[in-house]
Image (cartoon, rainbow, N blue to C red):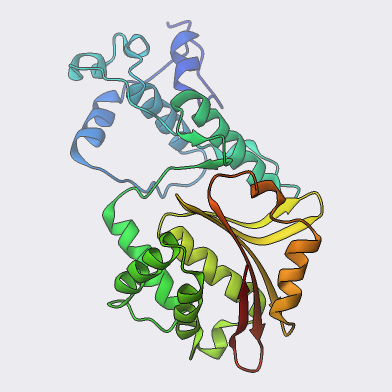
Length: 287
């Protein structure tokens, strides 16, 4: 009779193998799963072995052959290449505060950055990119039309125009084009008008690959939007039913542009006012 202990409640493949727990070898099925498919959604209930399966896949893709000694996969796999593995476990958090999920995600991103060097510590962002062309096109073709009047066919061409204007330091041309984007926006899409406009700008800039940050914190307040390109830095402040001069004055009085004044890139300070009645940009000032 075997003296091995059953691994009740243990979800770590490494722990099971290194500590000699009882393990039923299903690694041949894992080999088939990896070699015959690309994407999987596991719709099984709790306690069905999903976490252990993921842990086993992590060990496999990490190339830890020693853990598979004596198992079917040891013989089936001939190359044992080590791959980057991004394993995100959402079971580890209590989620008892609004920032709980953000903390878990940020911790995971920092760990991945330390291992793979994929982060940009200068700007505090992570460049994971789109997993494939279909997802990228999905953002451009479907998310953009949801927020604007531009249809799916026009969206990629409009994005190209935005890119040229921002990269060439032409904020006036950009905002004139943006006015046409906001025109005829369906009323039912807007509950918080100022937030809606801010979201549209953020989405546009993100889609075209610019470094973008909303609600950027400084010692004297929060900047509504920061945009950085190779040659320019844009500091934007928005007002709803105010005046563009007031938005620009806030940038000046609260020194929002101070963190970027030593940057080699040309700096634009832009105050923008949105009109509730016109449901569009009423006026903007560029300095």
